[in-house]
Amino acid sequence: MSKPRKTAPTPTRALDRGLHVLEVVANRPGQTLAEISTACDLSPATALRILETLRGRDFLIRNDETKTYGIGLRALEVGSRFLADTGLRETAQGSLAALATETGLTATLAVLQDGDVVYLDVFEGTGSLRSAARIGGRAPIHATAAGKILLAWHWSAGLDDALGRIDFAALTPNTITDADRFRAELEQVRTAGLAFDRQERDVDICCISAPIRKRTGEVIGALGLQGPARSVADREDHLCTVLAAAAVHVSSRLGYRGPRRDPGGDDTASTLID
Image 1: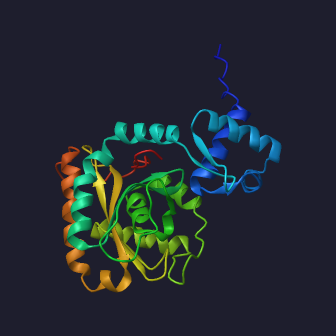
Image 2: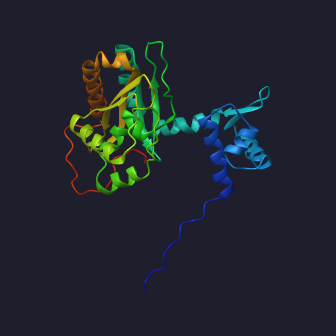
């Protein structure tokens, strides 16, 4: 007699709503109650109850003068616990700081999460142009060098599934908006071991990214440099060299010792937290 099939537990609606509100505030701090309730498709009364609950537990703060909400200390503590547990951010920090100092560009560390690039760490360069990347910020896979690195070593069904979830929206005239063209770009990334964003997310900003691997060879992060297009183009070869060396150094500290063997028909995805 076959065993009864287990059913997935029903999500807690109130908790799901609360976490959605927290995400909305985190993605764009400084919103009013009306803006948050609209963004979350909640009535103002429901949104207010959730906001006050989160504020009571220090996950959110409220500016009484502007009547807007922001992230509280408790949310930072929870997020910091994740970063401490992964070890990736701590391992890469020295290399990120060195890259930013040596090149004058912004150095970033990113992973994949829920179909987006998420920045675990950002070291601003010495130039006057500030990067759009911020710790905890998200960016689209198809328009970033980090996204290309983090997808390039997915294989078979894992890659097909990931590509199927990308909307390929045009962010600039240079954004890749075709799945087949993007797939071809990923093949070039696997060959070169580096990925490029040539003004594909932001006009006049170029990025270069290299893979970070753990002991087994899986790509678990992307180390990147980004800055003004001309500044990157004028010394691209040098930037590629120092970035690749930094990625190898971080990977070696994580236990990676040699070239990765292609998994062939393995459908697993090489990600940290996807």
